[in-house]
Length: 369
Ligand SMILES: Cc1ncc(COP(=O)(O)O)c(C=O)c1O
Image (cartoon, rainbow, N blue to C red; front, side, top):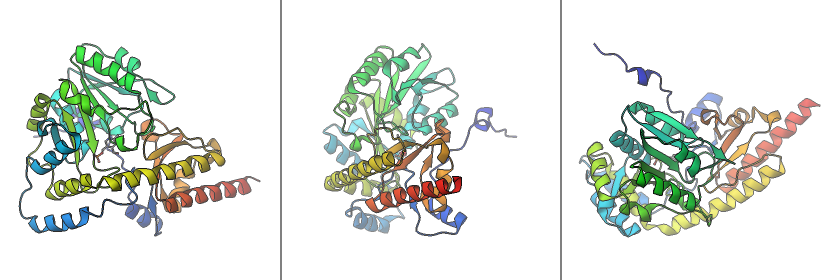
């Protein structure tokens, strides 16, 4: 006889950004755009396509479970030894592997009140309690996180920059966290999924520090600026000892053959990354200024998306946008029901979004008259 574990029964499923196909089926429309999952609207580097075609001829074979060539490429890219890297089926899998390695029902973990939702979906799988630290102006605080730690705290997780707020913690704040966690044997996981977009002088990556600390792990992904969300590849950097334990906790062949080859090719094309970041900034400048013009407040962002406050008289705007074929992300699940998250799209998509919002506002004003 089996029974479903009580802690699993209580979990809520992950709600992804609505896929275009599902929206079009639901409303009987076509030509929709998704500005909800922080993907790269320009696809991926052209150099990836022939590499996938070539790897596609060898799909009868298992992939390299040690991910030798991709780790070698990452090691070269970061100028660190290969033994400091682990590769996953997206960085989401690595977050799970890290949790699986260090969490047990005796522990608690600490994260910012505003953090990527996956952390709070995964952590209960390991029976741990989550302590949420308050933020100021949507920026997470080292002091607040530290104040929640006790002898049962196994881990602090910080997404920097943060999804869904787009804000980042300053370098000095991260140093405080690292200093505290290193002294108290707490694992510090920094999720740098949006690293490439961050340009604040206060921002710093923690990758250069990670091989030197026994308690620091940094994750990155190929799903955002690299435009490979569909193929699933992410990596983490840590000291060799931590990596050796994480390696034991992962399933063999977790990174498929296409993902390994695609990521190597994508990493080589840094011109594509630079160009994506440039166009994204252009798009965000446009969105911030146009949203401001129509009275929609935005939070300054270090990512490829913007969190925007929905005016109270405009509360149905997410559903209305969907009916016109524009998918943005509601943030009810994040406890931020009065906000929406908009991924910066191509300029054409951004213009369409603003035009539609303006039209919807005008119609609403006319109906109210
Ligand atoms: C902060 C953050 N971390 C990790 C991920 C997961 O990315 P991946 O596709 O690599 O699993 C996301 C995806 O939205 C994210 O926003």
